[in-house]
Image 1 (cartoon, rainbow, N blue to C red):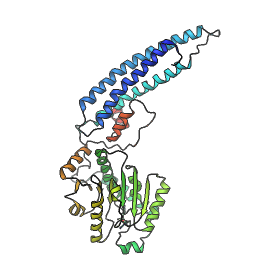
Image 2 (cartoon, helix red, strand yellow):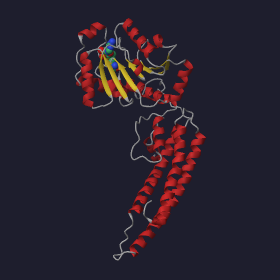
Image 3 (cartoon, rainbow, N blue to C red):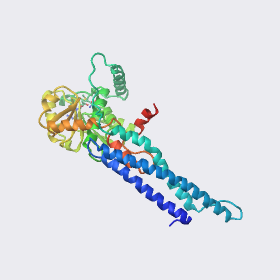
Image 4 (cartoon, protein in one colour):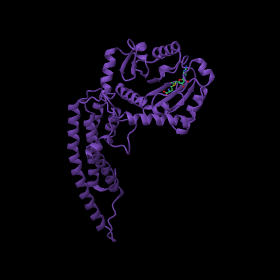
Length: 377
Ligand SMILES: C[S@@+](CC[C@H](N)C(=O)[O-])C[C@H]1O[C@@H](n2cnc3c(N)ncnc32)[C@H](O)[C@@H]1O
């Protein structure tokens, strides 16, 4: 028991009870956001009202704490010959705990705004709708894509290895970066909709100089590039080392004999092989080995016709899901459309009663910071 008198002890116990009381609706909101959309809006709204009600109690508690502390300080001053108000440390500890709860409650309006954003009723398409006529954003993408082309050269792309060429490999001709980002972001949202734990494993089959592996690292927990050409594989490894990303690796090997496709959650391939027969064999190998629910990104002609249908369903753009029926894939896509677009991998700052809500928001693709601009506007 802390040593700050009966009044302080009673307030300390009350603060503990208030913290537990506030944790309950926070846990309810986090749990409701943790299930598949549509979320239980009524339950979340009721828990939100509960937070507001407890917030008033915390406000009242803070005022009483301030008064009790002032009274304790006055008594302490009377007891000393020098008249200084020196309180027992327990009062300061109580003050720090109360400040923590108040700071958490200060976050509540922003958290509530983000929760309101996350509630269903507004599906957001995985891919922007096709526009008639001139796309006003095409110029921005073209400049970004040209920049990545330049970076690829500046990073010292080696010439294709003769053996790799004889093997039927394409040279390292990258998919336009904007197209990759569009599909990788949509794949991330599908991954969130799958509601798996632990972060996704991404594989680039034929990763060339590794720029897509590095780009994927922003979305997925662990990223691997598989590359046949030893010069490209070395350049990709060097790039990742220099970038300092701890979650990426390069494997120098042949995708036609690689046996571990079932270890990945997202598999990307951009026309690795020149010869149609080898490319088709590679596609078949991947599709037959991956686990059901694996997201495939295959942005080139022919993949949909060859691998689509039974066992590999389209999700829009260049995305496919393996091992699902058409109805399951449509449901998954719908779920993914209820996720937001935010990519956040960990909660920020000191943990408090609302940290589980924040984590649940992130797992749905929403971020507290996302809504700040809207509130301030
Ligand atoms: C068209 S590039 C794509 C590069 C990168 N994935 C991108 O999208 O920017 C194809 C890459 O696949 C590699 N490749 C082709 N066949 C392969 C195989 N059987 N095993 C591993 N890599 C292969 C090539 O060496 C080349 O780097």
